[in-house]
Amino acid sequence: MTSPTLDRVLDAIVRVDPDFNVKFVSASGRRWFGGAAPAAFPDNFLAILHPGDVDMFRAASRGTPESFACDIRVLKDGQENWINVRGYQLPDVQQYMMCIIDISAWKTDDSVLRHAAEHDDLTGLPNRVFLKHTVEQCIEAGNLPFSVALLDLDGFKKVNDTYGHAVGDAVLVETAKRLNRVIGPDDVLVRLGGDEFVMVLFDPDVLAVNSVMTRILLAIARPYDTSPHNAYLGVSIGVATYPEHGEDYSTLLKNADRAMYHSKNGGKNRVSFFAESAESADLSIKSAIHDGIQEGEFFLEYQPQYDINRCLVGAEALMRWSSRTFGRVAPDKFIPIVEETGLMPFLGKWALRCACHQLKQFQELMPGFVMSVNVSPIQFGGDDFDSLVLEAISEAGVDPATVILEITESTLMHSREQTERTLARLREKRIRFSIDDFGTGFSSLAYLTRLPVSSIKIDKSFIRAIGDPPADSAADKKLITAMINLAHSIDLKVVAEGVEKEEQFSFLKSSGCNLIQGYLLGKPMSAEAITSLLNITAGTVA
Image (cartoon, rainbow, N blue to C red; front, top):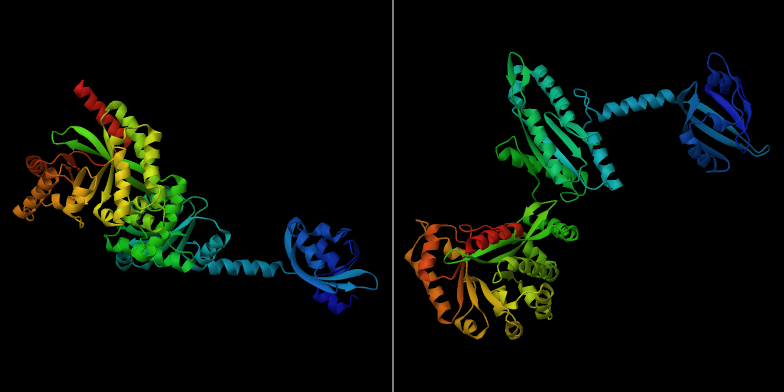
């Protein structure tokens, strides 16, 4: 059982019963366990195992009845040692013979080799191999979300060429130290190669990531001591976020790299977040819209409307979206996607109810205040649209005559019979309608006279040319005047949107326009800002 040959090859031979009580230990095993002063081997083999490996050892020993093998840790001389155990069943005596080899040196060598393979010799930072492994582990573990920031030093090549590689290496080491002081304790900093670094940031807050990027720009901007002269560098940064900008390591790094080159091409020493192509961006925005609805990211702003004497008389409710992923998203970007995904009836209903409740508060300061609300063709085409409108107005307790629904010319032309019935039912309840973006569609005089419309809104594309010397023309002014005269001839009021210059206002006033809306008199603003304007108006009147 314990021949000289076998005893020399193995560090220990131990025989145990089914409960791992020790029945025999070889002389070499006692020396191996006791060191210079041999000590009594424990009565139970489990007593020498590392507590964290006991369950693994038990599972391995139950794997096959004839034999088993595993690498485990033992506590020897107060230190952890790795051993390889091969156990063989002795059925005649219902025991196991376990052959043990100390593999601590191998494990240590393996750890050193692995560290060398995963770390950069110059800076001591993890390298590309470590980065790939870490990102893939995060994706597999479902640690959502996280951002990958790719950093490329601006001006490093000049330092390297001017002062030599030794100074260049010193600059890279100093850069690593500065970046390490910026990131959080759970974040990862990697040297990708050359003068490129990568950060993996685990804070899901976009503002927090932005803050880290700002601190990086400031940290790199400090002068580098490259005697006899200081060197000044910048850094171009590209950021991609998992899973919005990639669901695997390669895609994330590629998109961060694309964003970084956008920073380079945009003037360097700046941060760019990855912006997808129009085709792929829609998919990410669709997902973000659903999340935004659940998180309450949508809200309303109100653009004030004034009469021709510059008296505040109403406002247009405008849907806005501030996404935690994309930041502030323009309406012309998200509204078509909302309509495409079938979410407009839900968001439209919410916007109408919100606007009516806010109108009630505005009317406490100005009883005749009017609220305009945009209506999507998809909303308008719903069978229960009129019921939803009446319900929202009734719930808020506002006068229906102070609610104006803005519809486009294309809405008027779609499902004409249903459109006329819906308009007629709501008009009976004294709700008013305005044709938005008038002049850009294809409505006819016949529809204007037959449908219960109370006003038209001249599109800003017509207003923009007024007062702009290169584009200003008598023809444009004649066209606007003709639209105003046409509307007045059939008892419709006229609203001009996009008024930004005094010349535009003066022309519209002289042409008989009724209401003015645009940046000249007021940008879209919060309900609180409208309330302040109403308080000022009320004080002026008083």
